[in-house]
Amino acid sequence: MTSPTTTDQRPEPPEGDDEPSDADLVDAVRSGDTGAYGTLYVRHARGARRLAGTLVRDRADADDLVAETFAKVLATLRAGRGPAHAFRPYLYTTLRHLRYDRLRAEQKVEFTDDLSRYEAGVPFADPTVAQLDRIFAAQAFARLPERWRAVLWHTAVQGESPAQVAGRLGLTPGGVAALAFRARERLRQIYLQQHVAPGDAPACRQVATRLAGYLRGRLARRARTSVDGHLATCAQCRAALDELSDLPAAG
Image 1 (cartoon, rainbow, N blue to C red):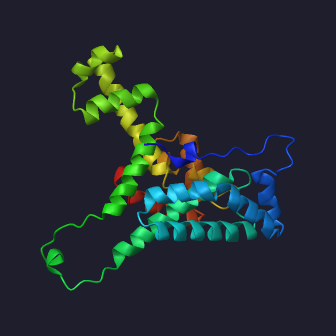
Image 2: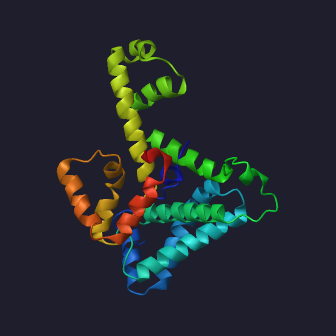
Image 3: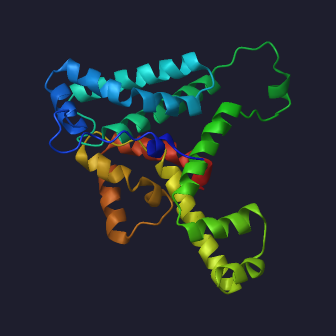
């Protein structure tokens, strides 16, 4: 599966072009230029709609999600926060998190006269949540090196043993097992990291990039100590870590 973040990139104007860059427009918005945000909207709305279309089946809901995303990002910029340069990735991350927040809110409230499935203890799987998880998993898988994707495909998907795969990859069975372990771990970290929204402050943004590795216990001692110190004083980042801990891949 291909992510809209890679296929819908509209390059910023080349150097010397009269059209302002995203960074210039972001600065203008922070200075109170609403028209600059209109330019950003025109430049990135199509990509945002494509991404929303992969997360929401109903077109009206997708349009509403895009509108809410642009409104939230505008409010963030007006408050002096948000991205300095990478506007599109920030926009897409905000859109994904708004959708995820909606799904979690919808799961908490359900109006029904039939309580039998709750009385019987039958688990309920939301197909939309499952679809969103599949999208995140596919995007994480695509970001792995080709060799790592191959070993996961043969061992985890096809169910082949390390001995069966060894000849194809030019490794020993033990080497295949070790490579598969590293690939699975890296896949979990990428998947988890996709659920982390960039923080507002520079220190929060730096910690946000390390939360998946921190949760999985894969940070070097110095980096982990740095994250520990930040989490001790930042409620926002602690809340982000708590949300990340609820995901299946966190365990």
